[in-house]
Image (cartoon, rainbow, N blue to C red; front, top):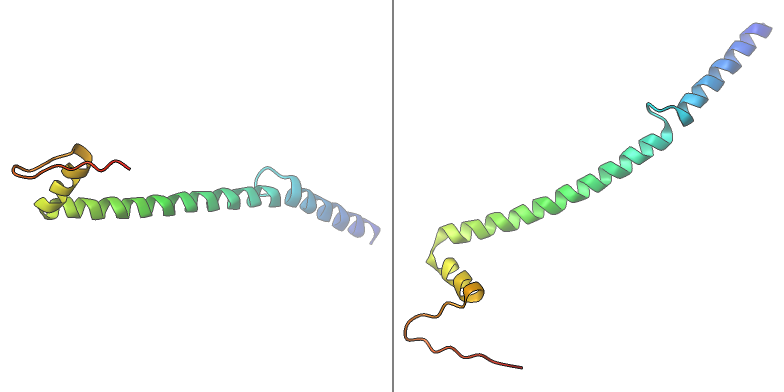
Length: 90
């Protein structure tokens, strides 16, 4: 009976060591993996939102001339013939 108790204590000590300090699956390592996973999930969500905006812009550009003209006006300063350009300085 004495050897059985010692074996159970040693086995329990071994399991506790593996639970807290082992390189393959200890509790602190699992917490670190969960934190990393949460960070990656957040990055993935931001990239999904960015992709949605880019796809919407792409659809606008494919859809017609108005979106292309608007972009040319704001980014390149396009002015049509017969239009007058006014610059407002504040």
